[in-house]
Image 1 (cartoon, rainbow, N blue to C red):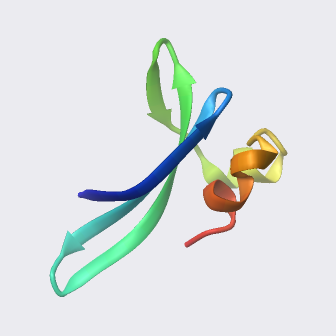
Image 2 (image 1 turned 180 degrees about the vertical axis):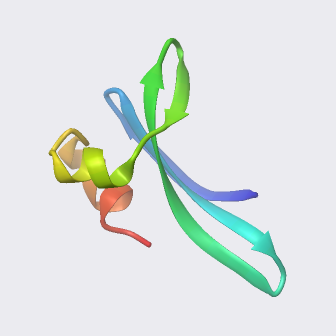
Length: 65
């Protein structure tokens, strides 16, 4: 998996990741939430829709692939 970009704000972060093997590579957006000093995967459907994701990263974290 390769990362093509990332960002964070408060307790949330996102990463653009390329997954798969050529020629079947897809870019996905992963939402992460800080927990116990580490980043843990978070449910985009839940946190993007309920307004938890900070507005300064919302576009990239919630409104992409």
